[in-house]
Image (tube, rainbow, N blue to C red; front, top):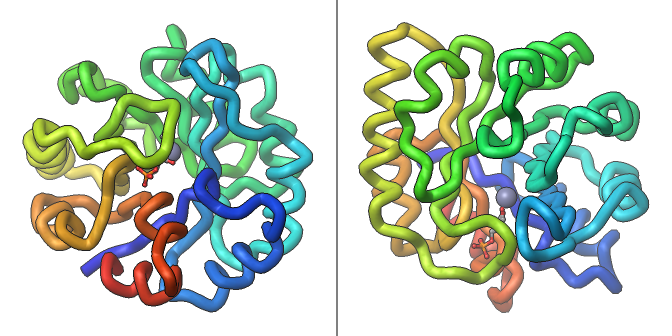
Length: 213
Ligand code: DX5
Ligand code: ZN
């Protein structure tokens, strides 16, 4: 089917090394790191010390999703820690072109994300500078929320845009992903699915990853 990026937000932080090892040995493509500042979203997740700890154990791509205002203040720091894919929110960046170019200049893959109520059409220009587009299929801020059904339509629209413009950015979908939705999401055009609670609430997280890979 496709690639899975495991959201570490739902991992057991008391046993972070084991969770990282599970992801390393699983079918997952990478580690999805949800960074929340309590301003852009109504929640605070974790910051640099935890990201550094994950980076120490991770042997797969580090895919960071910044749900923060003024994300540009820390691009260099993310690069230093070893982030490979850095995704910022369209809603947080008034100068998105500059942000995406700066992320690329620092040697990371540049991603842009849109909230559920933001239409795909606002990305008409940004997609020229993006390596990844992340469609939020829940309102950002919390794991374990229900998938918003209108996200399917947005994946199709984005796929059409990618084809028409002959671009190669990857399409990532984040929020409410589970085994009943994975196949259709890949069919609609998603390349990478993010999953947190579905993976970590399973008795066998590695087996759960396989069911959505
Ligand atoms: C939500 C985060 C997601 C979240 C996904 O703000 O961006 O990555 O952790 O969690 P689940 O898979 O539980 O919906
Ligand atoms: Zn995320």
